[in-house]
Image (cartoon, rainbow, N blue to C red; front, top):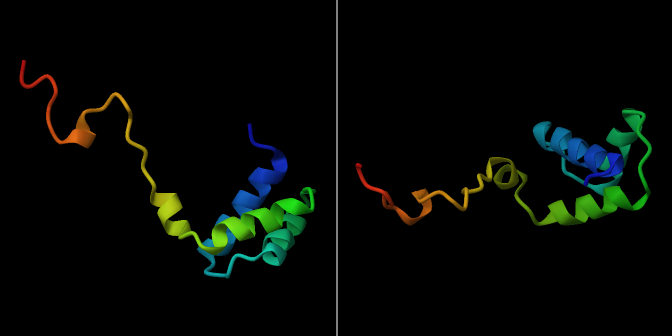
Length: 81
């Protein structure tokens, strides 16, 4: 379950990414403060550290494959019945 602080930092990071601004703890904290949301002091730093070496675009475009799907193995499990 996500807290308001986590969600605020996620949205702040997405806003910064969309505006092509480097994602840092200070910038996340500034966006959150501008939105008038109170977060625990450690959240901006944790998200900045996580996203420091992560391609945000890859996270946005990440598509999970349904475990029940046979698309991932490249064949039609039931054929044309």
